[in-house]
Length: 520
Image (cartoon, rainbow, N blue to C red):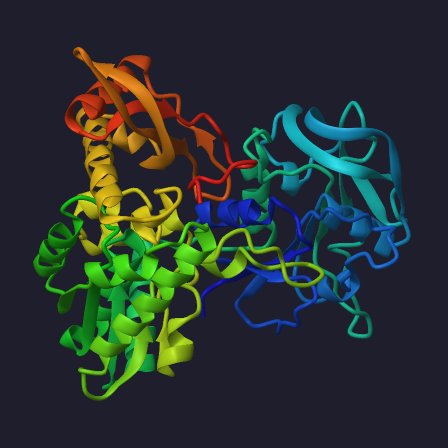
């Protein structure tokens, strides 16, 4: 059985970063809401309690039974998790005299496995309004900072011999800083100490390990049945299809739909790649149907829903032509699953996901989601291990609704062709300049704005294109890419000279948050 760390989510914006840090240590983990029941399975090696926007002293503050947890596995509380731990055992947690946010220096007060090989003064990141003023009895101080007297602590009764009549206890730790964020310089070392030295994880969660386990699981789930799958040409669906194909061969039937808002030459290029991979994929040209469905629609969600609804219709028509299909393959990845987790009810919809929901409800097929447990960069590692061409593995993420959400306002075939040309020049330019791999996602946005320009002796009145490029790890947060001015100048000049209909190019320097990566 695969070893597992469970992360209980109290609503922190950093919870996924904890998961990513654990995965980077080659340890498998899962995030679940704090109020979801779970079993202490044999493979469960430890529990991490996340931060939270709440105060432990609020009337309806999230709560869990830490006392019970440590009878089964080691526990680490992070920020809110540490404060909850302290309060649960009789400590005092109250509003801090000053807001504790940003960088701080961690001062070790005692040597311990959790802080092994951590410098005596190490930079950490704080983000909390409450603070632990008094530790519970039976706990000892491990570290402080300049602003807080209790930055890290542990329960001291751990390791004491127990009689058959007493309940054994596993190690219990708390840290009031965030070891998972980039600004905590040795945070990942601290987490690794917890995972390996305290929880005893063997660090065997690798791409090869995942492939072997997943293919075997797919064989058991699918048996002799057939799987149909909607492919997008993206990394997720391609890796998912390759895994399923590895398990069942040509009993996987792929369908790739040209929705009219793909990138330039993408339809044929993707089909060619699928053919090279030996995948059984049928291409469907449905461009005009999608243009008709999008006519007159200007709101982003309306466009997404129109594309999603028609895509389901087209896919359903084609899948019905395959006899005896019982399963639906999807390239759903972990952020798609956990992004909408909320502490106290449904979260606000920022934008609808293209590949989560919809199809299963219409087709009544059993789902096959081999990538459901992986982050995007993990999907890429698995893809490389599977031998998928680098050009597809390293391809930037591309939204399901395609260029429809990169054309602000109404979609027309003319606008699509304009943006396809501009986007192609931009992406190819990034590749030629050796910049493509330095950004996480890039694309051109066609704005519903025309402006006056001069070309030769002629006055022009044409569209504006915004170039977007961001750096990120998983897309949850992103910073705008600091592309060289010379490159931007050259690309701007090339787009304006080549693409008739565009006479102005701007560059988007917004980060996520507050902006999203896509404009719609």
